[in-house]
Image (tube, rainbow, N blue to C red; front, top):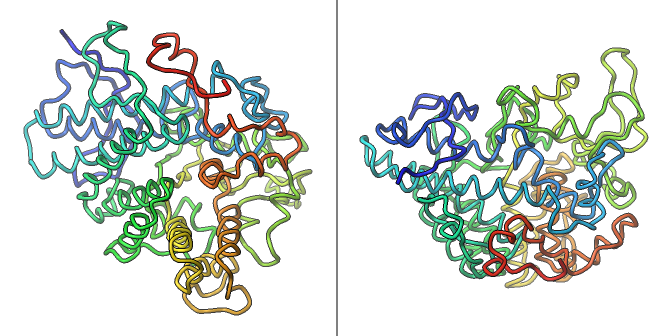
Length: 489
């Protein structure tokens, strides 16, 4: 039987000669899909593309995952420009199993997993270098592991699908929900295989998964699992490995499109101008955070100024990178003050007029995250050691534009108890990772989601059910027995 292949993009990428480019140019069928090494490369680039492209829909990391990980947390909310009732339900945490944002996220994650599966299954068949083929398979495993890591945290136990479908028969497509432990076992296996990827690539191949990226995601996996020794092991391999990772001296450089894939960017989803020819398939954050120099409220807004914008100490540069209270209007030359601070990390200040041209990557894991993750694991395992303090202080020094590796009594944390350092790490993450898809995951793994979200008046319907999202009803309609619903939905 001919196998059914969907969403597999043929892309312009060649081994060791071209930068990662995720704009699809055509579709291929099974008959001419996997013959040469270039076909293998194209299949893996299609897996990368699943993170940033979805023609006709906001892409997974281009904004759609934001509804669950950010708007579903305490700091982000739906503004008046967000007229979709499904989005507004996500913001107020009144969503149910029919919510289309939850359904789209599930579809996008499993579409990416399926594309990775197709690559993993078929690359061994092509002609070409065995070294390159092994590398490509492990890149696909990295993407599969990353996507399953999103899925297990969002929904708990989910179906594990490791091969492309060979039939369109509904009964054959059913895959019962695996346990959380089973899903994590598969994630760890995929990412462990991906640890054999190259440490670096030539600059013209920036954006590909590396061994450092695999170790960094593994550190996050173990942190989520509260496996402190493994977290410490993997985080230190990232920090001490021959990767060249470091904090940018300037916090704003993380989101500077001219400094993509720099020393702090361990792995980022790649976005280009006019990606796929329309803004909905690229990074959609500027279009939904900035509506122009008017009082019109954007679709994505800060939920509570006092709880988030006002918490930054004087001199903490992260506030004015993460949010903008004022912007110079280039048309009038005047400084415009917004009624409420707007999200700003993904604003291209040189090109505010054309949101589809925004080419700012979305970080998945960066060096500051690994420093804070390591500090958290050390503090949980051994208490508030000097090492744990120093890891946090490096992030704090950069936040206040101080030399990162030089102790500074004006900003350094010293002599904290374990409990105090726990709270300090949580506060740093709150300030550091605005709109980076971290907040909801952090609150859930700390067990503080309900407590923290209840502080936001507009989100007081939060309950323990919100520690997971509902299995989409469209999926349960196919297999209600194999996909039991999460509690509270």
